[in-house]
Amino acid sequence: MDREQRWNFIQSLDDDLLKGGIILSEWCVFIIRDCDEAFAAGADLATIITAAAAIETYLRAESGIQKRQSFFELVEKSELSDALKKDIDRVRKYRNKWVHIADPTDDQTIINSPEFYDNELEENSILAQCTLRRTIYSNQWV
Image (cartoon, rainbow, N blue to C red; front, side, top):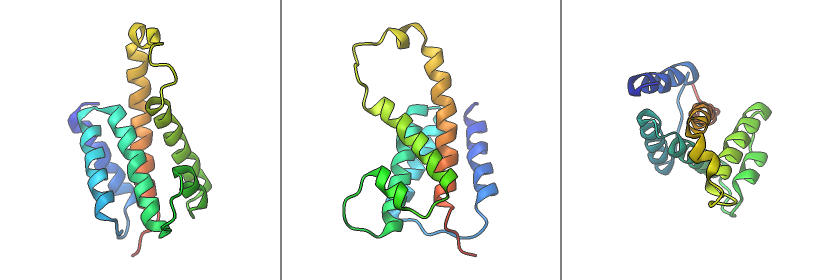
C-alpha cells in the first residue's frame, strides 16, 4: 500500500468501527496519532510497537487501577471480548519478538531474506491498526 492507501485504510476503519463517541486520555491520543503517522509512512515496525503502546495506555486509563500491572494482566482483566483479547495478545507477542530479540548477532535470515520480514511486518502492522481501533472503540457511547 502507498501512503494514500494507508490513510484511506485508517479512515475506513474509523468509518466502520466508530458509531458513537469515545473519550481517550491525551496520552492515548498522542500515541495513536504517532502510530497512524508511522503506518501511513510505511514504518510497519514502529506501527506495531506504538499500537501496542496505545492499547496498553488505553487499558490503563479504562481500568482506573493505579497498581502497576503488566500489559498481559491488563488485557486479561479487561472486559474486552475474547476474540479481541486474542488479537491483542497476537500483537503483543509479535511486538515482543522484535523488542526482545534473543540473539541480535544471529542476523543471517534478515540479511538473506529482508522481503520476508517486510511482508510479515506489513501484515502485522495492519493487524495492529485493526486491533488498536477495535480496542479504543470497544466502549462507545451514543
